[in-house]
Image (cartoon, rainbow, N blue to C red; front, side, top):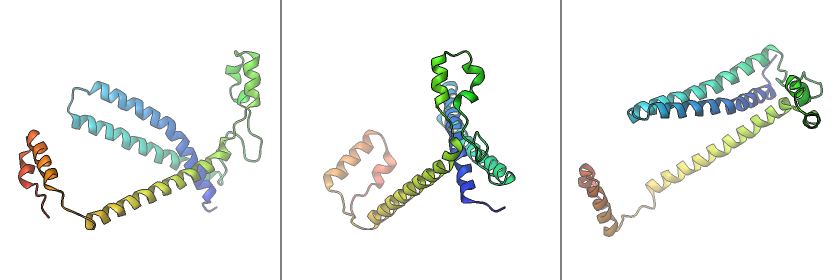
Length: 185
């Protein structure tokens, strides 16, 4: 059976949902790294935190791959909490061992709620793709605008601005740049 776009979006949706707790776990690891390594060199902390970021991305890709592979093996069925074509499971059925100790009022509220995450995962994937495309176009436009500004519409700064820059650089003892700063064009 071929790959369907619904299966691809479903796998992406589940990977995005799982990335929420994976990102939370990565945040906790980064907080611990920063607390334990606060006296170490900043470059060492940077490498450690970058490793956590890369691991978070790898976890996302792994989750996507697992869901995608499982969907291919099951014929592209959705990975929901219920079998395809059946009604969603009530939340009370999922939490039966825990809800026995809860009061009757809370159990009644839970039984009126239902979970159908499987039907939402393709939508989550679609909205993520649309958001990603929008942000990519936005950044591409900003890049093109920056390139245009680099090549056109340039004017030399006035002498007062140049003197102020030289003063700031010399106050911070930046000698290599003060000799190189040429504000004439």
